[in-house]
Image 1 (cartoon, one colour):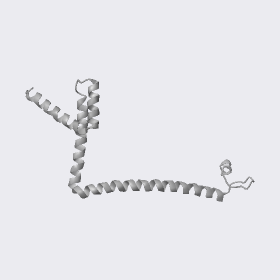
Image 2: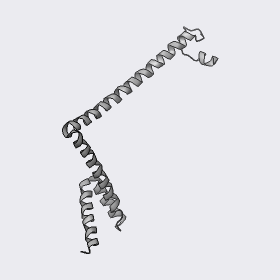
Image 3: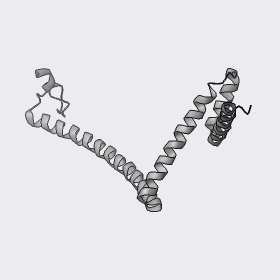
Image 4: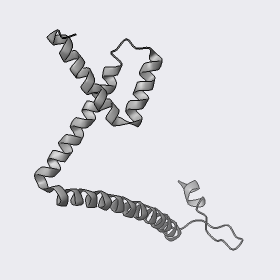
Amino acid sequence: PNNLLKSVDLPTLGRPTMATTGSIKMVLEKNVAVFQSLFLLHYKDTQRSISKKTDMLQATHDIFGTFGTIFVALLAFALLITWIAAISGIHEYPYSERKKLIITILFILFPPYAFVWLAFDMYRQYAILKGKN
C-alpha cells in the first residue's frame, strides 16, 4: 500500500514528496474525467448509430405500415432461407468440386441465379416424381 502512494506522479519541485489523500483524489478525479470523456464519446456514437437504425425502421414503417412491414420482414426471411436452401442443394449433386465451387460463387455474387436454379431443380424433381422423365 505504501508503494502505491509513492507511485503517484506529482510535481515535486525537485524534492521527494509523499502522496497525500488530496493529491490521490486529484489524480483519481483526473483519470475518472478522462474515462468519462471516452465513455461519453462512445455513448454518443452508439446513440447516433441507434438513431440511424431507428430512422430506417421508422421510414420502413411509414412506407409499408404495420402489416406491410411484417410482411416485408417475413418475405426477406423466406428469401434468405430459400437462398441458403439453393446453396445447400447444389452440394447434394454429384458434380465435381470445381463445378460446385463455381456455381456457389455465382449464387453468392448473383443471388437471383440461386432462385432460378432452385425453381428449375424443383421442377426437375417434380417431373421425376410424376414419371415424365
